[in-house]
Amino acid sequence: MGDSSALSNPLNAFKGFYSMCLLIFSIVCIMGLIASRQTNLSADAHPAAAYVLIWVAILWLTMVEGGQASLVGLAPVNKELYRDSHPISYKCTSITNKGDNLDRYLLGRQFMVVFVVFSVNVSGGPLGGAELWGMPDWIITLFFQTGLAMILFTCNVGQLNTQVNASHCMLDYINTYFALFTLWVAMAVEFSGLVHSSYLIQMAVAAMAGKKIESNEDPRTPAQAAFFWIRCLYSLAILIGCFAVTLQALFQGKTTMWEGVPAWLATLIFFFLMSVVGMLEGMQIAFFAVSKIQESERGESVWAKKTCELLFRGEGHNLPGFMIGRQLCVVSCMFFVARVTSVSIPEGEDNVFGVSDGLQEFFGFGFLGALITTICASISWQLVASAFPIAFLSSPFTYILLRLCLLLEATGLCGAAWVIAAIHRKIAGYQRDEVYIGTAEERAKGEMGDSSSHVPVGAGHMGKLPGFADNAPASLKKLMKKDPSIGPYLANVFDAAEKGQKKETFNDDDFEA
Image (cartoon, rainbow, N blue to C red; front, side, top):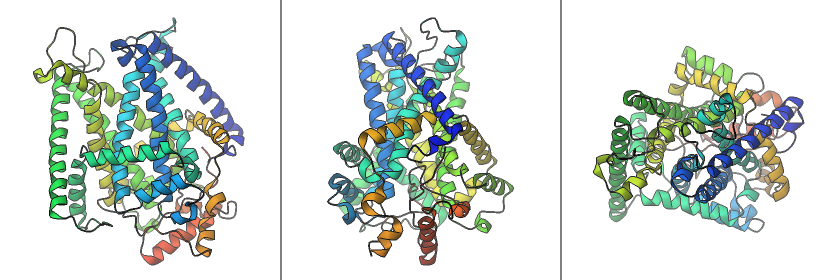
Protein backbone atom coordinates (compact mmCIF):
# COMPACT_ATOMS: atom_id res chain seq x y z
CA MET A 1 0.00 0.00 0.00
CA GLY A 2 1.33 3.41 -0.85
CA ASP A 3 -1.71 5.44 -1.86
CA SER A 4 -5.22 6.16 -0.70
CA SER A 5 -6.63 2.85 -2.04
CA ALA A 6 -6.23 1.05 1.27
CA LEU A 7 -7.99 3.89 3.08
CA SER A 8 -11.04 3.41 0.82
CA ASN A 9 -11.91 0.36 2.87
CA PRO A 10 -14.40 1.59 5.55
CA LEU A 11 -12.69 -0.31 8.37
CA ASN A 12 -9.24 0.97 7.37
CA ALA A 13 -10.62 4.49 7.03
CA PHE A 14 -12.01 4.28 10.57
CA LYS A 15 -8.69 2.98 11.87
CA GLY A 16 -6.92 5.84 10.13
CA PHE A 17 -9.29 8.39 11.67
CA TYR A 18 -9.10 7.20 15.27
CA SER A 19 -5.36 6.55 15.00
CA MET A 20 -4.86 10.14 13.79
CA CYS A 21 -6.88 11.41 16.76
CA LEU A 22 -4.71 9.41 19.16
CA LEU A 23 -1.56 10.59 17.40
CA ILE A 24 -2.51 14.27 17.56
CA PHE A 25 -3.40 13.89 21.24
CA SER A 26 -0.07 12.15 21.88
CA ILE A 27 1.96 14.85 20.13
CA VAL A 28 0.17 17.62 22.04
CA CYS A 29 0.84 15.80 25.33
CA ILE A 30 4.54 15.27 24.52
CA MET A 31 4.99 18.92 23.62
CA GLY A 32 3.19 19.88 26.83
CA LEU A 33 5.41 17.66 28.94
CA ILE A 34 8.51 19.21 27.39
CA ALA A 35 7.18 22.74 28.05
CA SER A 36 6.54 21.87 31.69
CA ARG A 37 10.03 20.32 32.06
CA GLN A 38 8.69 16.83 32.72
CA THR A 39 10.87 14.92 30.25
CA ASN A 40 14.42 13.67 30.72
CA LEU A 41 16.14 16.36 28.65
CA SER A 42 13.86 19.31 29.38
CA ALA A 43 14.27 18.69 33.13
CA ASP A 44 18.06 18.92 32.90
CA ALA A 45 18.31 21.52 30.13
CA HIS A 46 16.08 24.18 28.54
CA PRO A 47 12.85 22.91 26.92
CA ALA A 48 14.00 24.50 23.67
CA ALA A 49 16.82 21.94 23.50
CA ALA A 50 14.32 19.11 23.90
CA TYR A 51 12.06 20.55 21.20
CA VAL A 52 14.94 20.83 18.75
CA LEU A 53 16.29 17.36 19.49
CA ILE A 54 12.98 15.52 19.31
CA TRP A 55 11.95 17.02 15.96
CA VAL A 56 15.41 16.73 14.40
CA ALA A 57 15.58 13.12 15.58
CA ILE A 58 12.11 12.15 14.36
CA LEU A 59 12.62 13.79 10.96
CA TRP A 60 16.00 12.13 10.57
CA LEU A 61 14.40 8.82 11.50
CA THR A 62 12.04 9.20 8.54
CA MET A 63 15.01 9.27 6.18
CA VAL A 64 16.91 6.51 7.97
CA GLU A 65 13.89 4.19 7.66
CA GLY A 66 12.76 5.30 4.21
CA GLY A 67 16.31 5.29 2.89
CA GLN A 68 16.73 1.63 3.77
CA ALA A 69 13.59 0.62 1.89
CA SER A 70 14.74 2.59 -1.15
CA LEU A 71 18.39 1.54 -1.26
CA VAL A 72 17.63 -2.14 -0.65
CA GLY A 73 14.75 -2.11 -3.12
CA LEU A 74 16.81 -0.44 -5.84
CA ALA A 75 19.83 -2.71 -5.37
CA PRO A 76 18.84 -5.14 -8.18
CA VAL A 77 17.81 -2.37 -10.61
CA ASN A 78 20.20 -1.16 -13.30
CA LYS A 79 21.04 2.35 -12.08
CA GLU A 80 21.67 3.64 -15.61
CA LEU A 81 17.89 3.62 -16.08
CA TYR A 82 17.49 6.60 -13.75
CA ARG A 83 20.85 8.31 -14.08
CA ASP A 84 19.36 11.39 -15.78
CA SER A 85 15.92 11.51 -14.15
CA HIS A 86 17.16 11.05 -10.54
CA PRO A 87 20.81 12.11 -10.32
CA ILE A 88 21.01 12.09 -6.50
CA SER A 89 19.37 8.67 -6.28
CA TYR A 90 21.97 7.56 -8.81
CA LYS A 91 24.76 8.86 -6.55
CA CYS A 92 23.29 7.02 -3.57
CA THR A 93 22.97 3.65 -5.29
CA SER A 94 26.38 4.08 -6.93
CA ILE A 95 27.78 4.05 -3.40
CA THR A 96 25.71 1.21 -1.93
CA ASN A 97 25.96 -1.05 -5.00
CA LYS A 98 29.75 -0.93 -4.96
CA GLY A 99 31.52 -3.87 -3.34
CA ASP A 100 30.14 -4.66 0.10
CA ASN A 101 28.94 -1.13 0.78
CA LEU A 102 25.30 -2.19 1.14
CA ASP A 103 26.29 -4.39 4.07
CA ARG A 104 28.29 -1.51 5.56
CA TYR A 105 25.39 0.89 5.13
CA LEU A 106 22.93 -1.51 6.79
CA LEU A 107 25.32 -1.97 9.71
CA GLY A 108 25.77 1.76 10.28
CA ARG A 109 22.09 2.46 9.68
CA GLN A 110 21.06 -0.07 12.33
CA PHE A 111 22.97 1.86 14.98
CA MET A 112 21.49 5.12 13.73
CA VAL A 113 17.94 3.78 14.14
CA VAL A 114 18.51 2.69 17.72
CA PHE A 115 20.42 5.84 18.66
CA VAL A 116 17.80 8.13 17.13
CA VAL A 117 14.97 6.27 18.92
CA PHE A 118 16.90 6.60 22.18
CA SER A 119 17.34 10.33 21.46
CA VAL A 120 13.60 10.71 20.93
CA ASN A 121 13.05 9.02 24.29
CA VAL A 122 15.57 11.24 26.07
CA SER A 123 13.98 14.42 24.72
CA GLY A 124 10.29 13.47 24.99
CA GLY A 125 10.00 10.53 27.37
CA PRO A 126 7.97 11.56 30.46
CA LEU A 127 9.54 11.44 33.91
CA GLY A 128 8.08 9.17 36.55
CA GLY A 129 5.07 10.79 38.20
CA ALA A 130 4.56 13.26 35.33
CA GLU A 131 1.18 15.01 35.29
CA LEU A 132 -0.35 17.35 32.71
CA TRP A 133 -3.31 19.74 32.70
CA GLY A 134 -5.21 17.86 35.39
CA MET A 135 -5.69 14.76 33.25
CA PRO A 136 -7.25 11.73 34.99
CA ASP A 137 -4.93 9.04 36.30
CA TRP A 138 -5.99 6.43 33.75
CA ILE A 139 -4.94 8.66 30.84
CA ILE A 140 -1.63 9.47 32.51
CA THR A 141 -0.98 5.79 33.11
CA LEU A 142 -2.01 4.74 29.59
CA PHE A 143 -0.25 7.43 27.58
CA PHE A 144 2.65 8.50 29.82
CA GLN A 145 3.70 5.64 32.09
CA THR A 146 3.29 2.87 29.51
CA GLY A 147 4.92 5.05 26.85
CA LEU A 148 1.99 4.79 24.41
CA ALA A 149 2.21 8.46 23.40
CA MET A 150 5.90 8.14 22.49
CA ILE A 151 5.33 4.83 20.70
CA LEU A 152 2.53 6.22 18.51
CA PHE A 153 4.57 9.33 17.74
CA THR A 154 7.70 7.41 16.79
CA CYS A 155 6.03 4.62 14.79
CA ASN A 156 3.51 6.69 12.85
CA VAL A 157 5.54 9.83 12.20
CA GLY A 158 9.12 8.56 12.18
CA GLN A 159 8.93 5.08 10.72
CA LEU A 160 5.90 3.47 9.12
CA ASN A 161 4.63 6.32 6.96
CA THR A 162 8.05 6.76 5.38
CA GLN A 163 8.33 3.03 4.71
CA VAL A 164 4.95 3.11 2.95
CA ASN A 165 6.06 5.81 0.51
CA ALA A 166 9.64 4.63 0.14
CA SER A 167 8.48 1.10 -0.63
CA HIS A 168 6.78 2.28 -3.81
CA CYS A 169 8.50 5.58 -4.63
CA MET A 170 12.11 4.65 -4.02
CA LEU A 171 13.60 6.86 -6.69
CA ASP A 172 11.77 10.00 -5.63
CA TYR A 173 12.31 9.35 -1.94
CA ILE A 174 16.12 9.32 -1.98
CA ASN A 175 16.56 11.90 -4.71
CA THR A 176 17.54 14.52 -2.12
CA TYR A 177 20.79 15.62 -0.51
CA PHE A 178 19.23 14.77 2.84
CA ALA A 179 19.18 11.12 1.75
CA LEU A 180 22.76 11.32 0.48
CA PHE A 181 23.89 12.94 3.76
CA THR A 182 22.14 10.23 5.79
CA LEU A 183 23.82 7.56 3.69
CA TRP A 184 27.25 9.09 4.31
CA VAL A 185 26.58 9.29 8.05
CA ALA A 186 25.63 5.61 8.15
CA MET A 187 28.80 4.74 6.23
CA ALA A 188 30.84 6.89 8.61
CA VAL A 189 29.34 5.10 11.62
CA GLU A 190 30.42 1.77 10.16
CA PHE A 191 33.88 3.11 9.24
CA SER A 192 34.39 4.43 12.77
CA GLY A 193 34.45 0.86 14.04
CA LEU A 194 31.88 1.36 16.79
CA VAL A 195 29.86 -1.64 15.62
CA HIS A 196 32.76 -3.70 14.24
CA SER A 197 32.30 -6.33 16.94
CA SER A 198 29.28 -7.31 14.80
CA TYR A 199 31.76 -8.71 12.29
CA LEU A 200 33.05 -11.08 14.96
CA ILE A 201 29.49 -12.34 15.35
CA GLN A 202 29.23 -12.54 11.56
CA MET A 203 32.25 -14.82 11.41
CA ALA A 204 30.98 -17.00 14.25
CA VAL A 205 27.57 -17.41 12.60
CA ALA A 206 29.10 -18.31 9.25
CA ALA A 207 31.34 -20.86 10.97
CA MET A 208 28.36 -22.43 12.75
CA ALA A 209 26.53 -22.62 9.44
CA GLY A 210 29.57 -24.20 7.82
CA LYS A 211 29.54 -21.65 5.03
CA LYS A 212 31.98 -19.12 3.69
CA ILE A 213 31.06 -15.44 3.88
CA GLU A 214 30.53 -14.17 0.35
CA SER A 215 32.06 -10.86 -0.65
CA ASN A 216 32.09 -8.67 -3.73
CA GLU A 217 35.54 -7.31 -2.88
CA ASP A 218 39.08 -8.59 -3.18
CA PRO A 219 40.75 -10.03 -0.07
CA ARG A 220 42.07 -7.38 2.31
CA THR A 221 45.69 -6.30 2.06
CA PRO A 222 47.81 -6.73 5.23
CA ALA A 223 47.31 -3.04 6.07
CA GLN A 224 43.56 -3.26 5.52
CA ALA A 225 43.35 -6.42 7.59
CA ALA A 226 45.28 -4.80 10.46
CA PHE A 227 42.98 -1.76 10.40
CA PHE A 228 39.93 -4.03 10.34
CA TRP A 229 41.04 -6.13 13.31
CA ILE A 230 42.05 -3.09 15.34
CA ARG A 231 38.52 -1.71 14.93
CA CYS A 232 37.00 -5.08 15.84
CA LEU A 233 39.01 -5.24 19.05
CA TYR A 234 38.33 -1.69 20.14
CA SER A 235 34.62 -2.13 19.31
CA LEU A 236 34.57 -5.24 21.48
CA ALA A 237 36.29 -3.33 24.29
CA ILE A 238 33.71 -0.53 24.05
CA LEU A 239 30.85 -3.04 24.07
CA ILE A 240 32.22 -4.74 27.18
CA GLY A 241 32.64 -1.32 28.83
CA CYS A 242 29.02 -0.42 27.97
CA PHE A 243 27.81 -3.64 29.60
CA ALA A 244 29.96 -3.05 32.68
CA VAL A 245 28.69 0.51 33.24
CA THR A 246 25.06 -0.42 32.53
CA LEU A 247 25.01 -3.44 34.84
CA GLN A 248 26.84 -1.54 37.58
CA ALA A 249 24.30 1.29 37.33
CA LEU A 250 21.42 -1.20 37.39
CA PHE A 251 22.66 -2.95 40.52
CA GLN A 252 23.26 0.41 42.23
CA GLY A 253 19.85 1.78 41.24
CA LYS A 254 21.43 4.55 39.18
CA THR A 255 19.31 4.38 36.02
CA THR A 256 16.01 5.98 35.01
CA MET A 257 14.24 2.71 35.86
CA TRP A 258 11.01 3.22 37.81
CA GLU A 259 11.47 3.67 41.53
CA GLY A 260 10.78 0.62 43.66
CA VAL A 261 11.96 -1.89 41.06
CA PRO A 262 14.71 -4.02 42.68
CA ALA A 263 18.09 -4.28 40.94
CA TRP A 264 17.77 -8.00 40.19
CA LEU A 265 14.38 -7.49 38.55
CA ALA A 266 15.63 -4.50 36.52
CA THR A 267 18.50 -6.64 35.24
CA LEU A 268 16.15 -9.45 34.26
CA ILE A 269 13.85 -6.98 32.49
CA PHE A 270 16.86 -5.61 30.60
CA PHE A 271 17.91 -9.01 29.24
CA PHE A 272 14.32 -10.08 28.60
CA LEU A 273 13.58 -6.99 26.51
CA MET A 274 16.84 -7.43 24.61
CA SER A 275 15.80 -11.00 23.80
CA VAL A 276 12.36 -9.89 22.62
CA VAL A 277 13.89 -7.24 20.34
CA GLY A 278 16.32 -9.86 19.03
CA MET A 279 13.55 -12.36 18.33
CA LEU A 280 11.53 -9.74 16.46
CA GLU A 281 14.56 -8.67 14.42
CA GLY A 282 15.37 -12.27 13.55
CA MET A 283 11.78 -13.21 12.79
CA GLN A 284 11.45 -10.69 9.98
CA ILE A 285 14.53 -12.16 8.30
CA ALA A 286 13.33 -15.73 8.80
CA PHE A 287 9.80 -15.00 7.56
CA PHE A 288 10.97 -13.42 4.32
CA ALA A 289 13.42 -16.28 3.81
CA VAL A 290 10.81 -19.04 4.19
CA SER A 291 8.28 -17.17 2.06
CA LYS A 292 10.39 -18.11 -0.96
CA ILE A 293 10.86 -21.81 -0.33
CA GLN A 294 8.52 -24.76 -0.73
CA GLU A 295 6.22 -25.70 2.13
CA SER A 296 7.92 -29.09 2.44
CA GLU A 297 11.23 -27.34 3.19
CA ARG A 298 9.94 -25.29 6.12
CA GLY A 299 10.77 -27.85 8.79
CA GLU A 300 8.93 -30.63 10.57
CA SER A 301 8.51 -28.88 13.90
CA VAL A 302 4.94 -28.47 15.13
CA TRP A 303 5.66 -24.83 15.91
CA ALA A 304 7.19 -24.23 12.49
CA LYS A 305 4.03 -25.60 10.84
CA LYS A 306 1.74 -23.57 13.08
CA THR A 307 3.76 -20.40 12.46
CA CYS A 308 3.78 -20.83 8.67
CA GLU A 309 0.09 -21.71 8.61
CA LEU A 310 -0.73 -18.50 10.45
CA LEU A 311 1.77 -16.36 8.55
CA PHE A 312 0.68 -17.39 5.05
CA ARG A 313 -3.03 -17.88 5.75
CA GLY A 314 -5.61 -16.64 3.24
CA GLU A 315 -4.33 -14.08 0.77
CA GLY A 316 -1.06 -13.50 2.57
CA HIS A 317 -1.85 -10.26 4.43
CA ASN A 318 -0.47 -11.60 7.71
CA LEU A 319 3.14 -11.15 6.56
CA PRO A 320 2.91 -7.36 6.06
CA GLY A 321 0.57 -7.27 9.05
CA PHE A 322 3.31 -8.84 11.16
CA MET A 323 5.78 -6.20 9.96
CA ILE A 324 3.49 -3.42 11.20
CA GLY A 325 2.83 -5.03 14.57
CA ARG A 326 6.51 -5.87 14.85
CA GLN A 327 7.39 -2.20 14.48
CA LEU A 328 5.15 -1.35 17.42
CA CYS A 329 6.70 -4.12 19.53
CA VAL A 330 10.30 -3.20 18.72
CA VAL A 331 9.83 0.50 19.41
CA SER A 332 8.01 -0.29 22.66
CA CYS A 333 10.85 -2.51 23.80
CA MET A 334 13.47 0.05 22.77
CA PHE A 335 11.80 2.76 24.85
CA PHE A 336 11.76 0.45 27.86
CA VAL A 337 15.39 -0.55 27.25
CA ALA A 338 16.27 3.14 27.03
CA ARG A 339 14.63 3.73 30.40
CA VAL A 340 16.36 0.72 31.95
CA THR A 341 19.83 1.55 30.60
CA SER A 342 19.95 5.36 30.78
CA VAL A 343 22.32 6.17 33.64
CA SER A 344 21.04 8.77 36.12
CA ILE A 345 22.86 9.57 39.35
CA PRO A 346 20.64 10.48 42.32
CA GLU A 347 21.62 13.73 43.97
CA GLY A 348 24.46 13.33 46.44
CA GLU A 349 25.64 9.90 45.19
CA ASP A 350 28.93 9.03 43.50
CA ASN A 351 29.34 8.55 39.77
CA VAL A 352 29.47 5.04 38.32
CA PHE A 353 33.01 3.66 38.75
CA GLY A 354 33.98 7.11 40.02
CA VAL A 355 34.24 8.63 36.53
CA SER A 356 34.35 12.38 35.93
CA ASP A 357 31.16 14.42 35.82
CA GLY A 358 31.59 15.04 32.09
CA LEU A 359 31.82 11.34 31.31
CA GLN A 360 28.93 10.64 33.65
CA GLU A 361 26.75 13.10 31.72
CA PHE A 362 27.74 11.31 28.52
CA PHE A 363 26.52 8.02 30.02
CA GLY A 364 23.14 9.66 30.57
CA PHE A 365 22.60 10.35 26.87
CA GLY A 366 21.65 6.71 26.20
CA PHE A 367 24.67 5.96 24.00
CA LEU A 368 25.58 2.86 26.02
CA GLY A 369 22.16 1.29 25.74
CA ALA A 370 21.95 2.16 22.04
CA LEU A 371 25.23 0.40 21.26
CA ILE A 372 24.33 -2.68 23.32
CA THR A 373 20.90 -2.89 21.69
CA THR A 374 22.29 -2.44 18.18
CA ILE A 375 24.87 -5.21 18.42
CA CYS A 376 23.39 -7.69 20.89
CA ALA A 377 19.65 -7.25 20.34
CA SER A 378 19.52 -6.43 16.66
CA ILE A 379 22.43 -7.19 14.34
CA SER A 380 23.49 -10.45 15.98
CA TRP A 381 19.97 -11.92 15.86
CA GLN A 382 19.53 -10.87 12.23
CA LEU A 383 22.78 -12.60 11.31
CA VAL A 384 21.72 -15.79 13.09
CA ALA A 385 18.28 -15.73 11.44
CA SER A 386 19.80 -15.25 7.98
CA ALA A 387 21.83 -18.43 8.49
CA PHE A 388 19.26 -20.51 10.39
CA PRO A 389 15.75 -19.31 9.41
CA ILE A 390 14.09 -22.69 10.09
CA ALA A 391 15.42 -22.68 13.67
CA PHE A 392 13.52 -19.46 14.32
CA LEU A 393 10.32 -21.01 12.98
CA SER A 394 10.68 -23.98 15.30
CA SER A 395 10.49 -21.92 18.49
CA PRO A 396 7.17 -21.51 20.34
CA PHE A 397 8.23 -17.95 21.19
CA THR A 398 8.15 -17.13 17.47
CA TYR A 399 4.53 -18.20 17.24
CA ILE A 400 3.59 -16.27 20.39
CA LEU A 401 5.28 -13.08 19.19
CA LEU A 402 3.68 -13.46 15.75
CA ARG A 403 0.26 -13.64 17.41
CA LEU A 404 1.07 -10.58 19.49
CA CYS A 405 2.25 -8.57 16.48
CA LEU A 406 -0.85 -9.45 14.47
CA LEU A 407 -3.03 -8.45 17.42
CA LEU A 408 -1.30 -5.08 17.65
CA GLU A 409 -1.68 -4.52 13.91
CA ALA A 410 -5.40 -5.37 14.12
CA THR A 411 -5.96 -2.60 16.67
CA GLY A 412 -5.26 -0.03 13.96
CA LEU A 413 -2.96 2.03 16.19
CA CYS A 414 -0.72 2.63 13.18
CA GLY A 415 -3.53 3.64 10.84
CA ALA A 416 -2.31 7.23 11.05
CA ALA A 417 0.84 6.22 9.17
CA TRP A 418 -1.18 5.72 5.98
CA VAL A 419 -2.90 9.07 6.37
CA ILE A 420 0.42 10.85 6.87
CA ALA A 421 1.96 8.91 3.98
CA ALA A 422 -0.89 9.93 1.64
CA ILE A 423 -0.55 13.58 2.62
CA HIS A 424 3.24 13.54 2.31
CA ARG A 425 3.11 11.80 -1.04
CA LYS A 426 0.63 14.35 -2.37
CA ILE A 427 2.67 17.34 -1.20
CA ALA A 428 6.01 15.93 -2.38
CA GLY A 429 4.58 14.81 -5.72
CA TYR A 430 6.00 11.31 -5.43
CA GLN A 431 5.32 8.88 -8.25
CA ARG A 432 5.74 5.13 -8.37
CA ASP A 433 9.04 3.84 -9.67
CA GLU A 434 7.28 2.15 -12.59
CA VAL A 435 6.56 5.60 -14.03
CA TYR A 436 10.28 6.19 -14.47
CA ILE A 437 11.81 2.75 -15.02
CA GLY A 438 8.88 0.48 -15.83
CA THR A 439 8.02 -2.81 -14.19
CA ALA A 440 10.45 -5.70 -13.71
CA GLU A 441 8.95 -7.43 -16.74
CA GLU A 442 9.30 -4.32 -18.89
CA ARG A 443 12.91 -3.89 -17.80
CA ALA A 444 13.64 -7.51 -18.63
CA LYS A 445 12.09 -7.19 -22.10
CA GLY A 446 14.23 -4.12 -22.74
CA GLU A 447 17.36 -6.11 -21.87
CA MET A 448 17.81 -4.03 -18.71
CA GLY A 449 16.55 -6.70 -16.33
CA ASP A 450 17.16 -6.68 -12.59
CA SER A 451 20.09 -8.57 -11.11
CA SER A 452 20.84 -9.41 -7.48
CA SER A 453 24.09 -11.22 -8.20
CA HIS A 454 26.09 -8.38 -6.63
CA VAL A 455 24.05 -8.41 -3.41
CA PRO A 456 25.43 -11.09 -1.04
CA VAL A 457 22.87 -12.85 1.16
CA GLY A 458 22.77 -15.84 3.47
CA ALA A 459 25.04 -16.82 6.33
CA GLY A 460 27.06 -13.93 7.68
CA HIS A 461 24.97 -11.19 6.08
CA MET A 462 22.17 -9.09 7.48
CA GLY A 463 18.97 -9.81 5.56
CA LYS A 464 18.34 -7.60 2.56
CA LEU A 465 14.72 -6.75 3.28
CA PRO A 466 12.52 -4.68 1.01
CA GLY A 467 10.15 -2.11 2.41
CA PHE A 468 7.77 -3.83 4.83
CA ALA A 469 4.86 -3.49 2.39
CA ASP A 470 6.68 -4.76 -0.66
CA ASN A 471 7.22 -8.46 -0.47
CA ALA A 472 4.80 -11.32 -0.70
CA PRO A 473 4.71 -14.99 0.29
CA ALA A 474 3.86 -17.80 -2.09
CA SER A 475 0.24 -17.79 -0.95
CA LEU A 476 -0.29 -14.60 -2.96
CA LYS A 477 -0.44 -16.66 -6.12
CA LYS A 478 -4.20 -16.42 -5.76
CA LEU A 479 -3.99 -12.67 -6.30
CA MET A 480 -2.41 -12.94 -9.74
CA LYS A 481 -5.76 -12.67 -11.43
CA LYS A 482 -6.75 -9.66 -9.34
CA ASP A 483 -3.44 -7.80 -9.23
CA PRO A 484 -1.17 -7.92 -12.29
CA SER A 485 1.83 -6.72 -10.28
CA ILE A 486 2.02 -10.09 -8.49
CA GLY A 487 3.00 -11.74 -11.77
CA PRO A 488 6.46 -10.15 -12.09
CA TYR A 489 7.17 -11.00 -8.46
CA LEU A 490 6.42 -14.69 -8.86
CA ALA A 491 8.19 -14.85 -12.22
CA ASN A 492 11.32 -13.41 -10.66
CA VAL A 493 11.22 -15.91 -7.78
CA PHE A 494 10.88 -18.73 -10.31
CA ASP A 495 13.80 -17.43 -12.37
CA ALA A 496 15.92 -17.12 -9.25
CA ALA A 497 15.18 -20.72 -8.30
CA GLU A 498 16.12 -21.89 -11.78
CA LYS A 499 19.45 -20.06 -11.59
CA GLY A 500 20.17 -21.11 -8.04
CA GLN A 501 20.19 -17.48 -6.90
CA LYS A 502 18.23 -15.59 -4.30
CA LYS A 503 16.62 -12.62 -6.01
CA GLU A 504 14.04 -10.14 -4.89
CA THR A 505 11.59 -7.93 -6.70
CA PHE A 506 9.44 -5.40 -5.01
CA ASN A 507 6.28 -4.85 -7.03
CA ASP A 508 3.39 -5.52 -4.64
CA ASP A 509 0.81 -2.95 -5.62
CA ASP A 510 -2.12 -3.75 -3.37
CA PHE A 511 -1.15 -3.88 0.28
CA GLU A 512 -3.81 -3.19 2.86
CA ALA A 513 -3.24 -2.59 6.54
